[in-house]
Length: 414
Image (tube, rainbow, N blue to C red; front, side):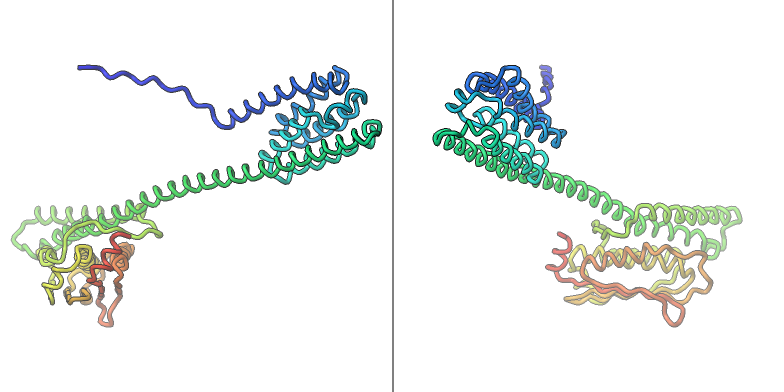
């Protein structure tokens, strides 16, 4: 059998920030290596001063990334001094007060400051640089003594200011677009994180409701059957009676632990999802299981054909509501008679579960998760549910669920 060739790991790609920093370093070095000889040969600046002032100009874009204020001060000081250290016989035949390398460095500096720190801070080097360059003709009137040299200096100042201002605008637009893109990316990541969190919470809510509806109901039936065994089966002995009492105590303890677990799983801000379970046709079997526990339960189903033709989601909700209402009646009204009435027509399924006043006070009170789950199921389908005590001391749960396919399908998709 041929073995798969292991893929060689690709080297990590260079980040955009690193690439931009490398390009900036290359540009600064290229400008410096060009500015120094041109400043010395064409404008007559002494070579040592060209080295020092050229370094101050070309290092400013790199310094501006972390220290914009120091970079602006350094660049403006070098830009102020450099045009003054020229020889008129040479400088009048070249661009002045900004040489071509100095102009490009100025434009690059304004672009870096604007891109990294924003247009407000980027306007400072632009304005200060223009003002500083305007003072050069005032301090060196010999450079603008003739009409030709004055026109050349004016054109140089106009071109430099225009290109630097255009760079400010372009850098501001590009940086703004990149910031908006970064914000959108962060929002997408945040939305994806919230979506996964919501899905997790909804799954926990669904698990909690199904545990409450299915397992808790079964445990309640076990507890009732075990507790009433001595009365329903008088022929059993003391040993069997003790065993049934132990089973009932274990069931009660399990129900208590399950309520604690449901308190951890449940959340207040999530709606439930339906999971396909039993339907309306399974309600008689549910009633029979309650009757086998020794509870007197009456069942009336009206409009069975319409009920059986209801949407599966409505049938599931109907079964679960009846199941939970019976479970609550068995737990909180032991020994009371229970009546279940289900009426279905072409538009609505109405459910009514009523238990009479219990012959004795129940041992404990519920946590309200069952009523919340029933209400969730009803509201999810566009129905309603009400539950509360009666004047005779009993308890009634009434629910109304729409049968319309369009509404149900829309709720299911949602």
